[in-house]
Amino acid sequence: MRVFNFSAGPSALPLEVLERAKDELIDFAGCGMSIMEMSHRSEIYESVAHQAERRFRALFAVPANYRVLFLQGGATAQFAAVPLNITGPNRRAAYVNTGIWSTKAILEAGRYLDEVVTVASTESSGFNRVPEPAEWLEMGPVDYLHYTDNETIGGVEFFSIPDAGETPLVCDMSSNILSREMDVSRFGVIYAGAQKNMGPSGITVVIVREDLLGHARPDTPSFMDYSIQAKNGSMLNTPPTYPWYLLGLVLEWLEAQGGVKAMEVLSQRKSALLYDAIDRSALFTNPVAIGSRSRMNIPFTLARPELEALFLQEARASGLVNLEGHRSVGGFRASLYNAMPYEGVSALVSFMSDFERRHG
Ligand SMILES: *Cc1c(COP(=O)(O)O)cnc(C)c1O
Image 1 (cartoon, rainbow, N blue to C red):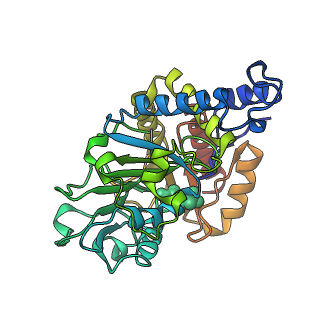
Image 2: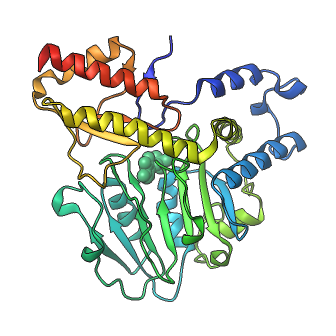
């Protein structure tokens, strides 16, 4: 039996995608072999890879002067790839700190740059919101400005794009890419690991503006160099062929659902349903300031922590799984990515209100 899987990542994939992959697993398109077993240089694989790129560009409205790369190493590799590739005369970069993922990005950038300026941080309020425009410090001359559009652990999301002026804006969109329309032309670089909102782990999408290519530090590992990967169609070495194929299937599914706009509307409905239930309840609490509440990851706690284990056990028995909060923060977290149907959230909300009636 399939459950409603609220995992933060790797996360639920659409059932239609899994079934299609199963149907094609042993004999792909009459080739007599699995797509996993064929050369990434074969004509048939190249067409699968190109189609995924075409679909991604169309769904996310990526302008023609941007390259889309399909790389390995997750968003974590990009924490290093960004300072290695987006270099300028300053050897300084500005970062916004809104939580655990921003903090990791800052620490990694510090290994490569002379200075990392934290231009705004909400650490003193427990990372429960995005910074107000008035809180931003002067960043001075920097090579780029980096922020995390959705903090997957804290459940904090930006709803407007920071104004970086002429400075290249770099964004980690790992956990909310393809969940709402974005003006890609505002960015220098966008990166996202697939395993949250668009596929399995093992593949990372990097969108980079063409004029930023060709400036990598000379000691940048070739496979992390955006311009080398762009020249080689993301196939400098063997790419993660099966995750790339699965990502393509998810994009095809997304198209059939009505694309990113449809996901935006659905994500608003799903998250509003859960936030309303939490706000009405005397037992459950969400710590994030209204206005910064993530549509994707919703952390919540219980007024009676002694009931936590029971909550998880009963939820699991009702087919609602992976509701544990991140190991660093505890409590609960429901991740409502594109593949989570409205019915899943509705089942969770009914379960929570029933649980409160019995134990609240
Ligand atoms: C999961 C996540 C990461 C880390 O991704 P990996 O693929 O494990 O390297 C980075 N940033 C955000 C916002 C994430 O959600």
